[in-house]
Image (cartoon, rainbow, N blue to C red):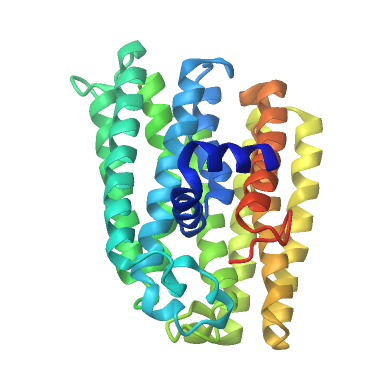
Length: 347
């Protein structure tokens, strides 16, 4: 980690090193590992080797999509973040990165992300010989789903902290990623990838509406938990968990591996307990730092739950990689960007 920090300083110089690190902080690059996995999982499900050019390209796509999306979100939420004490160290809030610079970098990142993802779709589409619809190549479907993902991502950033519509947009944006990668690679939509889409949508909705709403309840008047109230929030948590269990059950049954099933179901139980913990902490008005730790644990548990449930499709090598790689990525970049902690992000 220190070596990476030193290399950045040598290559960019002290002045530009600080700017680059502040941009990476604003883009929350330490959590880009999860977005990268959304590109890698469908490749493995399409029987593309883990060690391949496609995987490298998927990692690059994940980094660019994540960075552009979170930087855009930070710029759109800036006036709200300025009154949020928990985000007082955010580079955009402190002015270390001006709004003009932020928007310039955001446009560049959005452009690069679109180009790289489009290239990945075209590359995958060349090897696909099956059409989902007659005379409608997989590349066309991939581009259509990509466009929808971009639109929903932008809608989320536009309506974030302004309308409940945002809570429907962001899960759709992220859940479409593995769908357009998979369809481009194999040329058709399978039951497992549909189940992955549904799982991701429900969990992302839950993470942003209930969990994120509880986190921002004191600074966001349109927070889901403030708008819906305690009973409706509790009901949303219960219904979402039941829906997740049903989807998880079908993924496990189709996969047919008892060991992956046991691990995944155990993680579901842990996720449910963490979800109840989030509700309890919010109801009791406890400190945000403790709530943040439980929310992070809830997100990590949901991710691991899906990875192990898909073990039969992505193989044991893919499963091990998708468990270890995100942890190493997060610890490394979190320590570089926020030197006070290995695990808990400062923002």
